[in-house]
Image (cartoon, rainbow, N blue to C red; front, side, top):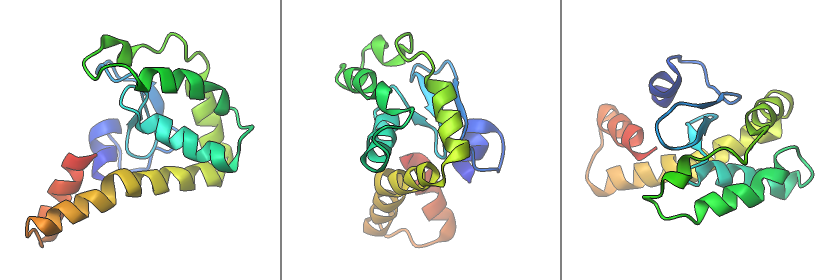
Length: 139
């Protein structure tokens, strides 16, 4: 929920949110602010494609993959010019398919929640505030 406050200014989970925030990471989308420029939006779309291979999002996998192969310092990671219709497709699928929302939960847990909690545990962090700080910094 903290991520929603910082990314979107609301405590409501933003599964269907998908906008260009001007932060150099392309489109910021969904539950934890998955981005097209940092590979986690690709992870969500690819995971969803496993269960719904003909979804409206499948056609974006080649471009998301191309972006994911760019050097981390490349300004091309912010480029959304070849992702026409991506935001509308993300929003539509988020609103119409609970499986896509479940995939967002799964990827967020795998990429951020579980590793963040493991990192905190390894560092001896046991308070809820300490865990919240680690989780907020790991996504």
